[in-house]
Amino acid sequence: MMKPKMIIFDAGRTLLDYTSIDTRKGVRALMPYITSNPFHLTPEQINRRTNEVFKWFEASRKQLFEVPECTILTLVYDLLQLKFSVGIKDIERILWESDSVKVPTPNAKETLDALNLMGIGTAVISNLDFSGDLLRNTLSELFPKHPFQFVIASSDYGIRKPNPLIFEAGIAKSGLKKEEIWYVGDQISVDVEGCRNAGMEPVLYKHPQNPYDAIPENLKVIEDLRDLVKLVNSEP
Image 1 (cartoon, helix red, strand yellow):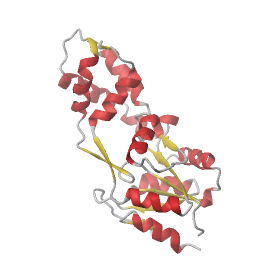
Image 2 (cartoon, rainbow, N blue to C red):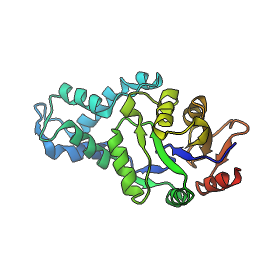
Image 3 (tube, helix red, strand yellow):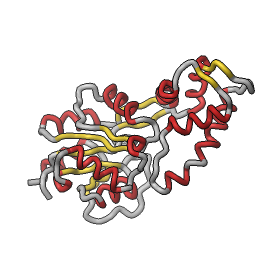
Image 4 (cartoon, one colour):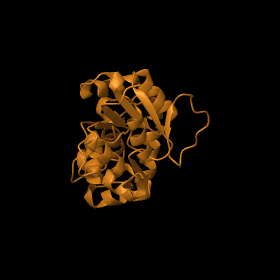
């Protein structure tokens, strides 16, 4: 196996962790922007109905399709007859910024800096119903000095990992051959199998909060992102 010219990362639980997740906080942050609430709904009632509607879209996710957050929110707020002083993109941003705190995973910054010094390109492909622009902005805030070549969210294309098409899109955007790219993610069925089916070399990052049972043989496995640099240096 050759040394990679690019390494593409998963986002959640690979490059960043979501802490203190509470969707009720996002709804509460939206309340000052509501201009019409004919049923006098509380944040808790709005959040409950939102979660009920989101469950209707679970089947599409199992079929590896991604319905963007904005589309589902538009349906929810029309059902509840809510009107806002801001547009749906701003509503999505407020929810994204308020629902959870996002922090880099341990040693992610050091690893990205090392890869950059080695001349290895980096990018991101992530399953996310929120917009790709929000993910790109967050990554820029968390890693302000790091030049990702591209950031792809599943909401950009309407398909989810492990659908190989989303990985193939990344290969096309890279301008490289699939054999020249590694993909690092924390889930075997989603990240490892998906990127392998697209022809990339998988690396499993064992996130401490994930359960792992049967790990395929001959799979590159790391428990510390800094070990990724060691793997790269071990290749001819």
